[in-house]
Amino acid sequence: MLPEKIETLVSTFSNHYDDYKNTKYNEANVRGDFIDKFIHILGLDVNNDAGVAEYFREVVKEDKQKVDEHTKSPDYCIQFGSKKLFFIEAKKPSVFSLI
Image (cartoon, rainbow, N blue to C red; front, side, top):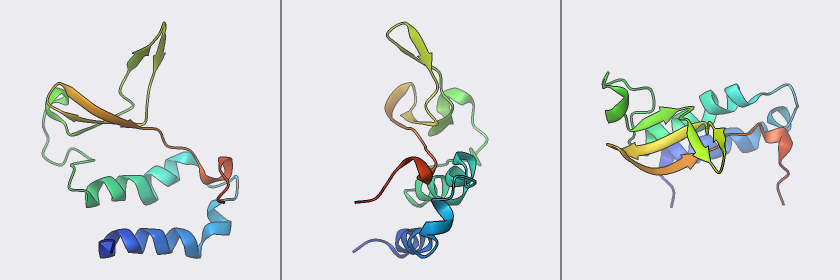
């Protein structure tokens, strides 16, 4: 069973799916309405409320990463100290279709 706060996010998305699939609903809103909240529910300081330096943040937004010869900026980098654990790339719902 999912934690109640995650179930609430899933229900909100499901209940308003057609609105979120509209091309006017953009990636910035997805991040604020769902992804930031999800990361916070996981116990990570997504907004740097602790006020720590960049190096010590748990979540770095738009972190620059070198991939081959290109610089990429994934929407979120989840890290512990200097160890980058994983990245999250956000997209607006209209670019995906559910099965």
